[in-house]
Structures are given as C-alpha cells and as structure tokens.
Image (cartoon, rainbow, N blue to C red; front, side, top):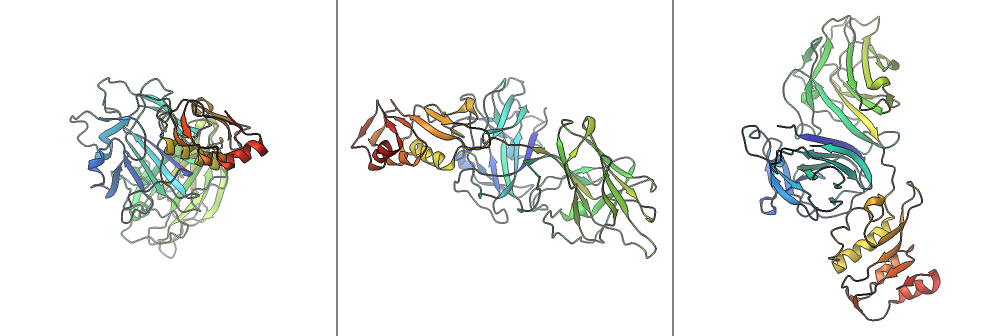
Amino acid sequence: MEYLNKLLLLACATFSVMSLVKSQNQQGFISLDCGLPSNESPYIEPLTNLTYISDVNFIRGGKTGNIENNSETDFISKPYKVLRYFPEGTRNCYNLSVKQGTKYLIRTFFLYGNYDGLNTSPRFDLFLGPNIWTSIDVLIPGLGTSTPMISAIELRPLRYDTYTARTGSLKKIVHFDFTNQRKEIRYPEDVYDRIWMPYSQPEWTQINTTRNVSGFSDGYNPPQDVIKTAAIPTNVSEPLEFIWNSESSDDQTYAYLYFAEIQKLKTNETREFKIVANGRLDYTNYIPTKFEAETLINPAPLKCEGGLCRVQLSKTPRSTLPPLMNAIEIFSVIQFPQSETYTDDVIAIKNIQSTYQLSRISGQWQGDPCVPKQFSWIGVSCNVIDISTPPRIIALDLSNNNLTGEVPEFLAKIKSLLVIRLRGNNLRGSVPQALQDREKNDGLKLL
C-alpha cells in the first residue's frame, strides 16, 4: 500500500471568508475531512483530539470515495479513510476562511487507497491561488494524467514573526525530534500542530531530562517532549552533523535549529560549539542556555551544492563537552509570483455568480477569474500586464445565461470593465444610473 502523501506550506493566506466551526483550544484551526458526509460532521479524532468537519461547504463539485478496507488500512486514522475525487472540470477549488494577513501552516493529505479499484496512483497538479504549488504523485486542476483526489486539508495559524523568509513562502522538508523514541508528536503537545518525527543516527547518543524546559519568547514553542530530548555525538571529540538532500541544487533552504542545555553541568564543565552550514560559519562560541529553549536560524538562505546540505556542530577548544541539538526543521523557499486578480473585481464578479446562479458556467467559475491564463473563467476577459500587477477584468460576456430580474448595478464597481454583453437574457427595467454614467464618462459598452 502506498504511503500517505503529505504536503506542508507556511504562507500568508488571502482566501475568501466563510463561517467555520470553532473548537475549544483550536482557535483558527481548519481541519477538513474531504469526502466526509455532512451528517457525520463534526467529529473529534481520538488520537489528536482535533475536531474535523466535512468539506462539503467549501468545495463545489467532486465525488466521494472510500479507501479499500483491508489489514493494511486498519491503522489509518479516520480523516484519511474517505476522500474527494474530481472526475470533471479543469479546475476544482476549495474556498477556506482565514484571517487576512495571518501567517498559516497549510497541510494537505493524499491517500489513494485504491478507492477506484484501478490500482493506479494519481498524478496531478496542486495550486495555491493562481500559483502552482507542486505536482502530486499518488485547488486541484485536472492537468495531470489521472483523476485528482484529496483526503484532508489542515490550516494552522502561526505567530506573525515566526518562519519568515526574505522572499516567498516556506515549504517543509523535515520536522525532526532528535530522539530514539518511536512516536510522532503533534497537537495537543504542539500548539501549532506541527508534526515532529523521531530521528537518530548510529553515531549519536540520545540524552533527555525530566525537568521542564522554559523560554519560548521567540514564538516557536517546541513541545516539551521535543525540547527535553537531544542528540550528542557518541565520540565526544567528533562534530554533530546533520545531512539532508534538497530537491534541487538551486533551492534556497532555511534550517531552524532548536537548542536547550538539558544536563546539569558541573562547575568545571562547559558546552560550547560553533555552527557551520554548508561550509559557512553562522554562529561562533554558542552556549546553549540551561533548561531554556532557543531557536537559531541561518541568517541568509542556504544553497546546497549538488543538492547535498550539511549542518555541522563542532565543539570549541575550551569546551569540555560535545555539542548537542534537540530538534531541527528544514524548509525550502517556494515563490508564488503571480498576483491575484484585483480584489474589487473579484468581489463584484462573485456577486454576479451568487446572485444569478449561473448554471451554464458556474461549475467553471472557480478560483481566480483571470489567472493562470489556462484556467481563466468562461466569458471573462482580463488585462494581465505582468505577474506582479493584479490583473483587471475588462470584458464580461453574460449573454444567453437565462438571467432574470434587473440589470445588476454592481457591475459598475468593476472600474476597469470596458464591455458587458447581456443579450439573450430576460432582464427587465432600465439600465442603472451607475452604468449609464460609466457609458457616458468611461466608454463602457453595454451590448
């Protein structure tokens, strides 16, 4: 059976606003069980105590499926046993409620589980807004070679001053807890619901403490079970080294190193070391604080020659003890360069969509109306200058849509609109004054 595919992204979100179920101690959390029937929503997942809700109110279209029920799937948690798949449409988009300007951890899960009986792992592309996020092997445009599907979506708000890249957003490579305990750690132990996996090396020795570790003023707040364990080199004269592979030698990478001195040192003992990342000295003469957590981050993004990345901790000449590290997070920088369509234009055209329930094209009117170009909405023409400038809607063809009622006045709010086609409908009444003024002063054409 294939593994549960998981993607994580740290980004500033700009999704549309909808109401959500809120759970105690999970303020701002969004946990969608994709494909869950609405009459089974919400429920509390017993292993994490997280509250999951159905995705039915956040997606238009798609069908539901269940993974195969056999001995290999017995251990799978409930959120991943059902899924939503999308056999129709070029683009199927989730609209999620977030607080504008808030930084979010965005996590998506994909478990094929042979739900369709074809034993063929899906391949498709995943977008965040108008920008491609990644290609999935197992906002889901049907560009790939098989039917897109998704098992769960999770969003977690983060503190505003954490996980900051010079440009772009951060895509997770690893969250490692340096321990030989074979268990993952997440919510409720981790307030941000990061998923920490255990990690050790044969040349390391694991140490731990039963004392609580304090000092979370920097906002990263590692769980106690993560920061109360650490790795040191078994050969105390050797450095402590962590190596990983980047997806590309061109990737920019950030390493978040977690430290706390968790041993009670004697008066004649000192633990001091330097930190070198890819041959570049980032920190000299570093001394972990006694039973107090601290997060160190490479000041500038790393580029790993040949795709091989390395962080090395070496004790200084005056140190009597080997270096230690409690945990590490690795992220690569991912760019989302394409600007979304101008906000007022989007609000106005979504008003049209909701007011008139455009049956002919509403299934295709999902996501951003203008970009990416291959998914632009039917009947919508846009002026796209460059990727850094928000596109503007310049023409709207609503002809032959069986529209009834009065001519919509809010069309005048799309200030860039030059042409509106309304023929073949059953609209009544006169043209609103706001549109007449636009015709007279701005050259708007009503056809």
